[in-house]
Length: 319
Length: 263
Image (cartoon, each protein chain N blue to C red):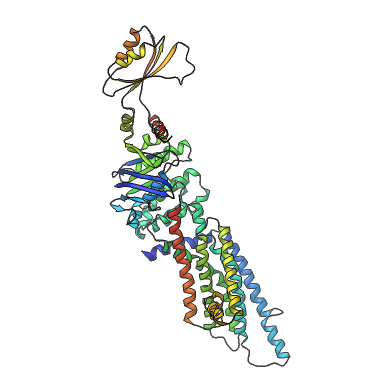
């Protein structure tokens, strides 16, 4: 449904995005994840037909965003970071206007406006002036204007930013309810958001795609196996080589981040291959060394860790 | 499709004036001032009726077309008054859209920049026409009493001239508004442009020769005065149409540039 290839946007000597590539299948929710300034907004603006790219192409529903801009715009609903609202209009007046300029035929306009209002739960406020409504409502109106012409593709730039927790849940549920019949790209810098709402994630940092996968596979891919957090009591000098000999164990590291441990206790981070279950051997080795095994916990890296890892890896590369 | 979209933008613009306190204030001030001038020019101390009766007392007789002279002086003053008001009408056309981020909505909708610009221009011109509508009542009352009767073509042409003058300035003002996201700044620059046009007109009237001729041809006020005097010449219309087109064209180019440069 959406295919982005070698997309670059260069301002002077700065590349806002460089060689971006990803694709989104029909009915999917794609999360576009990256820190502020990573190039998410630029990419989305290009897809929405607002910005021209310096290089590369993107196709939406088979139409080229540059050469067939009007066809693309007809098929895209776009919510920029700040919802584009005419504050002096009523909710339904605004949505009716958007439906008109998006090319909805006159006889279908009322029903489409009604259904957008219902989906975004704006029925009680439909006659009110937008200026008088809260941030949460405005965000929902923003989503309503993106879906009012029932486009096959919806692009949402930071749809939950600045909302309170209850509103965030409402907006996420709304977005999830739109998937299936619509293909959705949403950008965010909030990690739980992607694992909660998205089928697939593209991580972007400093204008480049760092990884693309489903949230769970992405974690697998990055952690490269399961890992254990072990707290032991006693002298660990001879323990570490012993642990490293166990088949399946990749790395053993002393974790010094916890400062409140008693002197003779150590926290170890042990990572293993995915296909082996080295937990038993690790525990046995510790006991055989005559050390006290105080705690042993299997830790899966959360997406948050993945993200931190990705960005830190990138930054060490740059430095 | 082109027409429907233009109408959609036009309607949105017109509706926005009904909810804007500023629009009501401008209209009220304009109505007040135009009403005062109308009465003054007609019945005041220096008014046309006083002047005519004074000259009759001095024994100067002859055919004076009072209605025609009055119309000329009224529209000359109204042309100048409009020049002050028009920058305020055009200042927010694009700058507000830029400030609110709604330009991004328009620019990602399947409508061309031309449609948006044309719809907006028609909207603001329509508002200006509404502002001069009340004059029809005054004129109907005054000219119905005129002897000899004034031919209806003359006031119609004067109105047309004023509307074209307004459309030309609004079109250029719209372009200026698209360059900034500050309405006040747009108004100031547009006002500076109006002053420039005024100076061009002054030079045109005071400089002879080829330069004077050229300036007379391109001066908006000169062309306006021709129409007000009841001289219908297609070249006047062409000049106005050119200014209007220039404003529209520059606006579309400016909006396209915003896309290329926005971060």
